Image (cartoon, rainbow over all chains, first blue to last red; front, side, top):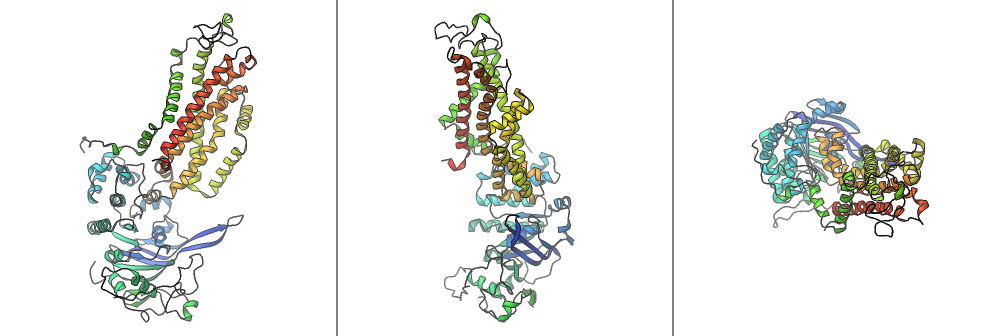
Amino acid sequence: MSDQYQEPQPLVQTRDLVKYYPIRGGVFLKEIASVKAVDHVSLTIGNGETLGLVGESGCGKTTFGRAILRLEEPTSGEVFFEGENILTYSPVQMRALRKAIQIIFQDPFSSLNPRKTVSHIIGEPLLIHGVKSRIERDERVLELLNVVGLRKEHMRRYPHQFSGGQRQRIGVARALALNPKLIICDEAVSALDVSIQAQVINLLKDLQETFGLTYLFISHDLSVVEHVSDRVAVMYLGKIVELAESKELYRKPLHPYTQALLSASPIPDPELKRKRIILKGDVPSPIDPPPGCRFHTRCLYRQDICHQEEPKLKEVTENHQAACFFAGKVGIESP
Amino acid sequence: MKKNRPQKSPEDRHPLLDQLSQLWRNKTAVAGLIIVAGFVLMAFFAPALSPHNPNDTSLYDQLKPPFWAYGGSDKNVLGTDDLGRDILSRIIYGARVSLIVAVVSVGLAFALGTLLGSISGYYKGALDNVIMRIMDIILAFPYLLLAIVVVAYLGPSLENAMMAIGITYVPRFARIVRGSVLEECEKDYVMAAKAVGAKDWRIIFIAILPNCLGPLIVQTTLSFASAILDAAALSFLGLGAQPPTPEWGAMIARSRALILRASWVMTFPGIAILMAVLGFNLLGDGLRDALDPRLRD
């Protein structure tokens, strides 16, 4: 996480990734509408970097993460992993690839099978990918437990005997079991207490250094994302509206939505006064998103063109992309 | 790794064991368990427990009353039937028949129902619709009537009665499993299993199904009770156990004509059915209380 941002080798690249959930109705269950959860998202995650993905609930962050893993089959688009389009992979190829991409879930209570011991939970990926010997598996499980800061006697316990933070560590250990290259942290710390959050974040950072991991860090918590990410992408209603190096984005947000988002995030300084941008109205329904710029219904600076044309995500300043016609020309500077 | 395992604390138990210990606090469930255990032991040790061969006829001992009534003796504690066969021995051997019928027919329904239900709940969509509509069709018939039709088609015998009962019980298992599987599928651990590349069968049978065991165990126990009852009913109608098999329902059917002359011939098999069904039902209800987390204090 150096000051000077260097474009790394891309590890994952999505091109026009789309995920629509059909809504069926009528006698013959015809598709009558669709929820446009992820709408033509093109993102690149560089090898070894942490890409933060922020946005409010329901904007499609989680769906995007799962679509990369093909846990939710994308409707269209392309996902390149190390240069190969994995959406054309057969189930067998995909199963082999799953070693390289792992996921950490938000809810540490539902992400661990309550009827299995910790050694089974962490050892299962190994078993599936060919480590048949129980002794070998247990050795690796023990190693992983050490890595995430749990002890040997935890191996035979069940998930309900752990605290939230410990469970999340088990989830991290499971994700690490297969030596992945990319880990998708889907709100990985959102369900934890602030003090535990810090522990888990530091653990993730240490692991990144040790194993050279790449993270897609999905969260709605702006301060956490700022802390962990090299670059940050802001998502609104299924689209990326702004993408920049972390410091740059927090210092000079270009998109009116990002500006509003940042002005709403609390700063731990009671003396500091700043102008809050209060957005009017609710997020429009992703079933029927507004035409033109998706944000125009709530934007303070909207013009006629915003209703008619959809702004493309384009480079406004160096390494700083925004999807707004007036990016950089409107709004306030973040404190 | 060394062999010295750390001391097992009570918390290290399997969650299912933990729930089953709840069962001990439920008095009626324990009563049910005792009755069921009694029948199981009776069936297991039938040759040692029964005073006579259940099929030995004795022309001199026809319709002897139980020992406490006038004319009864210690030789036939619960009396004899119209062929002079010892009723107590026949009831003890009858427990064997009834329990075998229960285990086989419920086992069949369990296996088939769990398979269909989990496939239905996991894959959803068209397959789910087809399977569940077939289950609905089976449920649309009064199930004893359906069992009678099946037996009438296959021919009356105990094996066919078990088959018939098993088939009619499939939908209840399929529905319960489907419901639980649908619920479990929403949890992240299923997604996590997919993310590590687990195959579908592994996700269904190793990850999801153990979490659906609670309602399944309850349903199994309660189905034992109704299977015993249904087997007795089919045998009563002459479609199940064929003479001289000592089966409670068949015993009642045979002595129907004697109800006014020798009521004991009919009463004791009836009580046996009642007790067995009661035992399984109490146990099933207790299990439901113990296994349902919402009902736990």
